[in-house]
Length: 327
Image (cartoon, rainbow, N blue to C red; front, side, top):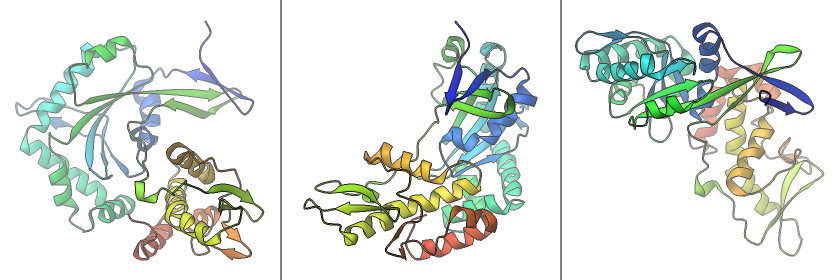
């Protein structure tokens, strides 16, 4: 049987297996760690040595925190499946867990994370927005505990040995992250993986689907029709303002950060998965009807890519104050 391939829009991608864990595989995992964790509110921290209470040192491949409803943190190990989990990864997992038991180790780790945050305005703003204050060091101190810890192991292929080795480790998560290279363009990649968590839309944001139909009309706006077939712009506005607009803002931020490549496609995918509504390609673009822009102030993806992330985050603060988004 031949090796796995992906055929996407007529273009073939061939499965690629990294030879060097540190030079080839680890940088790809770090680049996509937010995707792997399944959260745009994930922050990666660089590797550093941590020590057990007996002074035995080990160096994970990185750390990450996720600032969703229940903040969590991860020790990250990037491995190749051809290596035995019993020779390296399993002993490492025990060392990491023992190291975090040490209050001195936790303090050193928190201090290092805090310094990294203060050197990065994007990380600093993201944490401040999530915790609602500037007490970042206290937040990290409260978060970095053994109870909130998960060891995340990322492999290019998950084998039976790797699953078996960590069956008795409830605080260990294993993710398979496959990479495919485009034929004739080896620097163009596609990745196949299942994220730890998916972004969920709160129930109050979901539109009522009872007794209404959804369709696309000229003007590129999703319209809600009553059972009698009349267009109800009054119904349509709440749908966009309470549902599509928060997703639109979130997706623009993800696009600026390079986490997605297509804002409208991302919105359509989330809407379909979580509401059952299948939006057509043009129904989000522009959000206009009879010359009136529902989201004139938000602007286009192209506009914000030119303005940059820092300006977008300032605008996001304004939209949050207006109640357009909840976080």
